[in-house]
Length: 228
Ligand SMILES: [Ca+2]
Ligand SMILES: [Ca+2]
Ligand SMILES: [Ca+2]
Image (cartoon, rainbow, N blue to C red; front, side, top):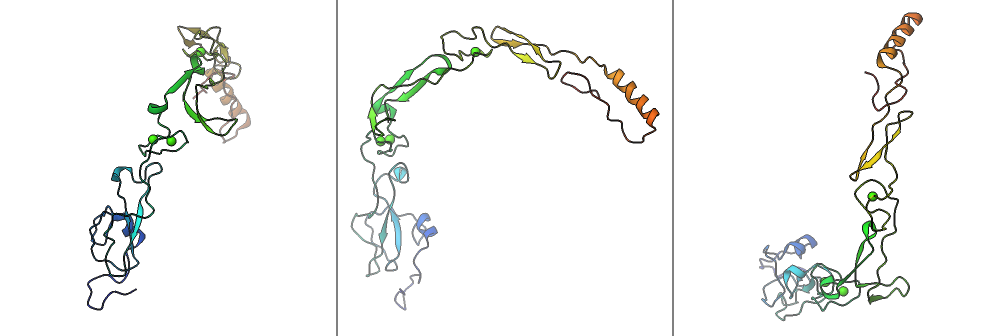
């Protein structure tokens, strides 16, 4: 709808981007009654609660619509807005503080030892009833294989007891080490073919075949590094 012929009002209502950014004059309006001119039917965001809560949890802004008299509503209503409520155990952030079912309200429960230790919110979704409940149910993480890492992986209360021996090296150079002071100690085997031998073999092959292409010499039999 167009405004009066002599009006300074813009013909079109604010875009969504303008709504997100604020009012026609560039300022954000909280939605509290301040009147003001506008294009009938155009809308603007509003929020009568704490501005920091809008968009957090269940809280969201509402929208005011410009009246037919070219005025924003002067009442304190902000249709569609959701204000902070009382936190309840429901899987939602009801009080819009950024925390769902605040542990500070319902408390937490810790169970398990070692790597199996888990801490859960006492308010949680019950897997059987599919309802949110408040209780001390807590299932530790499942135990793993004990390895040398200063962690009680198998959750028997002892760190690095009879851990799986560490290994190192590749191929035929793979060796088994030990766990010393919770750190793996392991030295890989050395290549059985020396780099010098490989080079000689390569040179011999080149002279024999008279090939101009680099010879694809076989690398060391084992070890982490190939010959340069
Ligand atoms: Ca909350
Ligand atoms: Ca809640
Ligand atoms: Ca361990």
